[in-house]
Length: 412
Image (cartoon, rainbow, N blue to C red; front, side, top):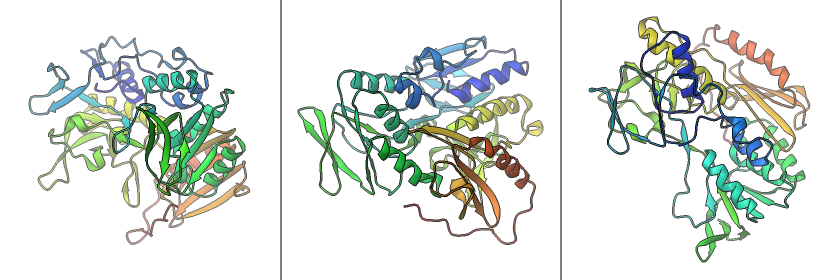
């Protein structure tokens, strides 16, 4: 098991629950025991949950050999060996790839006081900086991490002033419809400064520390602390040269989560029956829009894939089950509880089917070629149960005539 996040832990649970009594080794590049990531940018930063509260229950009950604080750095599929930092090698009969993702770094040198937030150690550094007196905080990027952090920091009651800088014109733009505008309005009411449609060209320093963010328009944003939240990078660099298909840096896997090898022309080839993939690193053929596989970085996806991947590894490709989980996601920020099901960002038409568009109580359905592909709710999460049922039914509908493709909307 390479990776000890949610997908890896669920895979361990699944292996033991299905009767696997062999040697189970778990490799993690983090020194901490496994923990739940979604609360990090919300409750842990806000101080309403402690590190102990977010530990993944049962992680020490697998009878596993744990190798923590050591990264996997190479894979030899011919000899069936995982190489670790320091040179040690681990043999395997079956391998689960669940290494997750890393925060995308700023493309260049950064001064002290510029952070990324992905893991527990990052949140400790952030809380230490704010606890040490940092009050002017600029967050670069208004995706889920940036928005959640902004909400948590302004809610601390410490007088932290937060500015969100985003090159596109709306926060959480992946949700589509009117929901991003609802989030923007709520952020402003909470006192967050929004610089939307603004790119960042660099940082201003005082000595070796950051003192400000320099937008591309030449203005200046004072900052005692900067968080770079510009997305995630799949943690698959260590798989270079392993002969696996890695489109967009993720591991291509079939609908049963078996890793595909790289064909001679660079496309996906046959599956490796001894390797399965789960979580953020998976580029799965079963999770797809009309344009092809869609990578997901959702909690529910990691949990479901971890469980199924382990079961299929034991069963083998001939007896394995396909992945049929309906994607779902939730977040909370500025008093809004936002949920989604399906793949709302892949639709071409958005319809407010409950509530008023642009209000803080709304359900917006996303359609493509007349087919429901996803739905997003604000403060009406229970309504999405019916949309999840409809999405499951859509799996059984035949594809429309032709290739079913329409131009994707341009996000602004």
